[in-house]
Every structure is written in structure tokens, then in C-alpha cells.
Image 1 (cartoon, rainbow, N blue to C red):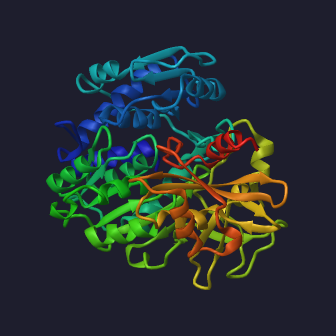
Image 2: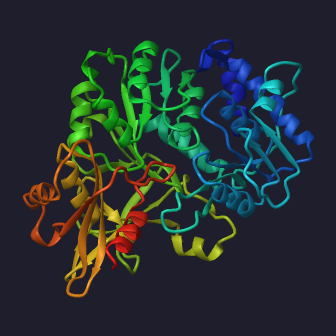
Image 3: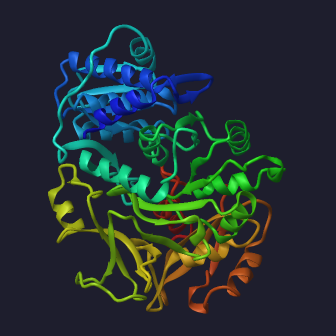
Length: 491
């Protein structure tokens, strides 16, 4: 079954039941199916051919999902563009992907190798919701490109990950088997994070089971609580930064959040103090999904009842395998730190037009994630850090995440990044950078961490910033923090 057939099947099953709601607009399953048929056929009529890439830069909302699944039906390849990225970054993606069309928010980024068609939100609204329509169906090989997912660019210019319909099927299956097995027609999924990133991955499994998707156009912690209460949503997805803001809302305990059965999270580690507070407020509902652009969203899952395993990213999804390997690609026994590797139908086909990099990343069928970690005897994965972020101080390996977790335990610290600063004696010294909730001295933070990590891992210095830079997926950009601090310190 292709993705278009899944949309049509849900339209037949659930008909006039609400499928989408945003800013007072309610769209049924049948209406969404018809809208994606109309737009899909119009795109084909513009001269676009199966396999052509189409850039999409739209805000959270109904039309964003309409164009996503119009492209799925018409055999075209989605290239997500982020409104928060610079013009240069989005132009690079248009050029790199060789996009032949672009659908945007009214402010199209320049560039594009051979753009033959462009449209905006108004065009979508004018053409999606009325008039006759014929089913839009362009066959697509399950191994052909379905969408390009650009990496966050934490290590330079972003790379385009080629994702297939085979992978999309696996992601949906993994979610419905392991992460949201009981979602159904009486449920609402509250989308607060950007549809262009992780939150969008939850739409298709919700749609397949007949659940309503309620979309917030932008995130605000207090508003999320209000919407959770009013919609009686049973599912939602937030990144840890969002969860931290929610649990700090004044009067958070006064909201009725009893409908929430599963608060999915991912994209970055969650401070234990935030996890504990969220579980106190919402109950045992937190569910972590660990993945990356090359294996989107669904490598491992940590279930709500497993959140007492501090630091674990859970166990492999049903359709995935996970292991740890050494530098020579030998499997490591439980407890030994190595590079986390995974294989299964979810994996990317490769990096767009980068066969050498693909061959370095996928070896013998195993995707090398670039994450360092280990598995315990029961198969639980514990991520230590990114391979390229490890600090070597005095010949000892220091994993920034461990020190960041210690800093995050301080009530004043909102978020933390730990980086290596070159040093003539030690090679590198450990340096912390934090954003804070209220005033705190560097010495207080240094003393606080000193009681929590071994001496060789302790930061020698700490800088306080107003906010830490993040990727579009809300991951802290350690490399940018590191470069700015090295420049500031003259190292």
C-alpha cells in the first residue's frame, strides 16, 4: 500500500469525522482526501514529473499537511524548508535538491536549479477545498525517493537524507506497534511542535487510526496547557525544552490534564529534574522516541513505565535492531561504550548525491549513528554523547552530556552545553555554557557540579548566556557554542 492509498482508506473508514482542526477550522477525513487529490492533480498539470523535488516552506497548519500528502499522491518528492532558517540556508537546499517547484508562505527563498512552478498558501486554500476532483494516484517504487530530510547542520552544511516510502511505512508501523498502540477514533493528538520536524511524523499514524489532529500554529507553554485541557487530548509531542517550559508555568497543577495518556518526547536529552516534575504533574505518561534524520524518529523507544531508567533511550522498536560497535566495526558486549548502530526497514536510502558519505555511514547494512553509547544486558540503550563532541582532557575521555546533566540539576539552570577549550597542558579543558532562570554565580555552579562528577570531568570555567543556539529541531548547537567560546577566550 502506498501513502495515498492509506489516506483514501482512512477517508472511507472515517468519512465526515473531524481529522484536522486549527484556528477554528475543522476538516474531515473525506475533505482531506479530496483536497490532496485536487492539489496533487494540479501539481501534475504544471508539468512536474514523478520524482521531481518540490520545496515546501509553510507554517504549522492544515495547508502544510495538505501539500505534504498531495506530493505523496502525485509521485513528487518533498523537500522541507524551515521558516526559521536563513534565506541562504533555504536557497542552498533548493539548489542542492534540484527543486523544480516550491510552495511557500508568501516569501519564497531565492534559488532553485530549475523552478518551473511556485505557489503560496493562498493558492492552496483557493484550490484545495472546492470543485470536482478525481483520485490522484501516481505509482511510486517503495525504494524510490519519497522525501528529502535535511540534517540539522550541526557539523557544517546540512546533508539531504533520501527517505523512501518503505521507510515511511516502517515509521508508521513502529509507532502504531510500540509508541501509540491504543490510539483510536476517540482520541486527539495535540500538535504543538513544528509539523516540519518531529510532530509531523505523528500525523499519519493518527490519521490511519481515525484520531483527530489539533494543530497549534506556534508553541506557548501556557496555551499548550489550555489546549490540552479544552481538547481533552490524549496524545502530544514536545521536545524537552518545551516540557521544561510547561512544568514551570505558574499554576500548572490547576489545569485538568487527566486526558493525557502519552506525552511523547525526543530530539535531545531531558534533564532528570524536568522528567521527574513532568511525571509528578501528568503521571506516568512520558514516552521517549530516539532517532535521527538518517533513521527518522524510531530507533528506540522508552515506555512510560520505564522512565525510572535514568539516562536510557529505551530498547529497539519492533522493526529495528540496535547494537554498539568499536572502531573496527566489531560488536561490543553489554556495558562497553562504542558507536551506536542500527538496521531495519526505517533506514535512509543514502545521502542525496553523496555516495562516498553514504558508504561511510551505512556499512554491512548497519547505520552508524555517530552517537556513543552502550547497551545493558536487557537491551536498553544508554547514549553517552555524540562521537564528534567528545572532549579529551589529560588523556581521559569526557562526555559532555554527563556534565550537562549535572549542570541541569541546578534549579537556576535552564539549559547547558559543555565543550572543550584547547589547553597547552591538558589538551582540552572542560568548559560549561548555561542559560539561567535566575541570577547565579559561576562559582556556585562550579561548586554544585564538583559534588556530582569526578574531578577530571569538572568544568574549569562556566559562561552564562541569555540563550543557547539551537537547530530547527531544537537541538543545542554545541559546535556553535564551542566556536564562539573559543573565539571569545582567544583559544
